[in-house]
Length: 369
Image (cartoon, rainbow, N blue to C red; front, side):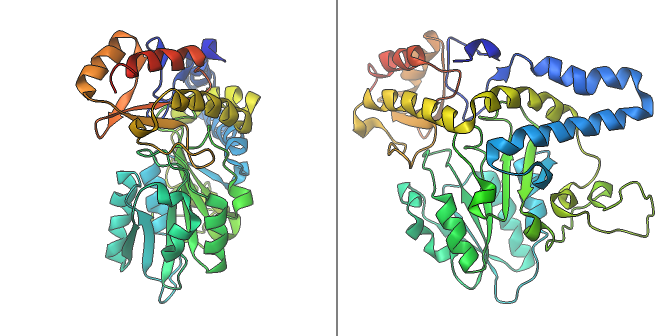
């Protein structure tokens, strides 16, 4: 399935949770929208570069269930989260931010800085129980300003019930921030339908777009109530006004842009959007889940560390082995690209994998459990 449209290191590539495989058209996309016009267009290059950003947003929007105008390109997830954290309106009595022990560390590092603003961090216990919306009840309280919800956790592949969490949070006036870094492009994501407030993500993983092409999504009504501190001339409603004494926030998500945006990473990342949108995320998810089930069904349940429940899992699996170092050597010899967490073999499934990949993985792992 689309293997020929990606550069796949090794014989069997299972690293989409870390670095999605590069589309064959990546170099051409970057050259056409960024590098080649730069050589000839002079000052007019800005129109060409801005169009590359617009193509990025338009291609990403259907993959995350959003409108393109509500997407703001960011250099990385941490940047987007920082900007949101420093933009929330003051609401007396709401001094808590809720997250979980299983969130990716960069999220915790950023939110820890909120303590400088008087916030208290509340950590929910990690584990498979995060797939149950009732586990999130501490986030639906009158003293909570925002809850950060990871759609799929990188270390357990547990998938959270985002729509229900967003609904309960909205009922209680709690802002929602969704981390979709480990889900976008492989798990159905519906930011508009969820009624979410914010989302952050990256093109690095299942979106197969490389580094530097991250994004922040903001619901228009929430964005217009937010006042980012980390601003720049592209956060201004009229960035080409050039009046140093006048600043007015741009409408919607654009106010989170900051200074001059990067272009090259987003121009290259557009190469994957066409491939993914050709199939659509629902199809990709069904395809990936079928292969993941083939892997799970081929192993004893006790060696699977990650969430294996249909509907409550992402696109990755963690497999306990007797000796990880010995297993890693065998996997490398077989050309199986993977990584590890806590001594377990971590692999993930995506559009360019097939049954032969799964069977090759099983042949090695079964000898090591």
